[in-house]
Amino acid sequence: MPNIPFNKPFLTGKEAHYMYDAVYSGKLSGNGKYTKLCQSFFEQRYGFKKSLLTTSCTDALEMAAILIDIQAGDEVILPSYTFVSTANAFVLRGAKLVFADSMADNPNMDAAIIEPLITEKTKAIVPVHYAGVACDMDAIMALANKHGLWVVEDAAQAIDSFYTNAKGEKRALGSIGHLAAFSFHETKNIISGEGGMLAINDDRFIDRAEIIWEKGTNRSAFFRGEVDKYGWVDVGSSFLPSETIAAFLWAQLENLDLIQNRRKEIWKMYFDQIQDWATNHEVALPKVPNNSTNNAHMFYIVMQNLNDRTRFIEYLKSLNIHAVFHYISLHKSDFFKAYDKSFSAVLPNCDRFSECLVRIPMYYDLETNDVLYISDRINQWDIKMQ
Ligand SMILES: *Cc1c(COP(=O)(O)O)cnc(C)c1O
Image (cartoon, rainbow, N blue to C red; front, side, top):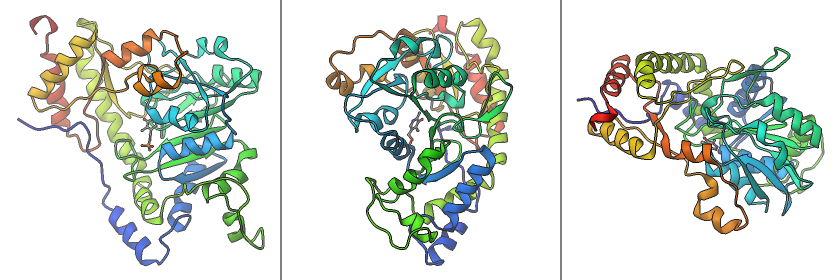
């Protein structure tokens, strides 16, 4: 019986080679050759005005919160069905979190319910492109324009995924909001162990982003010869990764199409193999709207209830297939309940995904045989027999 992990980081084979090069080039700190290679790659391929590598998506979100100048009491609208970092970045600056429910058939935040949540204090909307599937960005950007709000895309899972707007323009996720944060954590499609990127799509943020990135100094401008000395000009932190991390990431980026094509193949195999089973058992598979691509970040199944999900995960585990669930709704977390005792909204779709969604193994090295094996076992799972 094979033992199939939930995730396995994919190595292209060039990572250690480029890291070795970075180590012996004598330039180990950040913003060197490999950082610049990665950043230009992202800017050219996805149309970001500026890309800055960070040590995580969490860091990129924190940079975004500083850039849009979140102050204590400012309100931020975000989904509750997301990773803690989406919220923490704003909580660190004292924001009030206003959680919006997911859609009924998709864990993404429901854009249709955002407008009533907007108040005089609202400063930003933070859509999360769950599983790399686009939120309704036309609606979100229209609301942001109408009410003068910033949009920060949490694109942690959304590398190489695209959204087609009402005008028929196909744009990369992360290139639509004013700012966007990506993750290269080892559980994502493209990895560097820990790692991330801030994408800046509004010119007004570019200069300040570079300063905040490098500890609040104008060091980048100094090295370009734009100022004759560098010093402390703003708040900031150390958000940039070292060159060894960027070197690792570069090896992945050179193989981005290879990685993406294989992941999409695996995703489609799963879908084709278990589609009928899902219909027969009234279990939901991911829905990708027509205006979004699918970057095959994850394959998930939405069971009918918590009990079914628990038994399904145990059933797979007994076959050495490791499936996982995630996201305890943030509005039900211990931290948030203490942070904002006044929050009382009910978010039924979010709670349902929190209780019923399960993710099955999805990684580049997953063999076709294993995909067929997993699908076959899923097809043999009969709820009524459990
Ligand atoms: C992975 C993830 C993050 C955090 O990414 P890190 O790079 O680990 O900081 C944030 N938001 C979402 C939606 C994620 O999936």
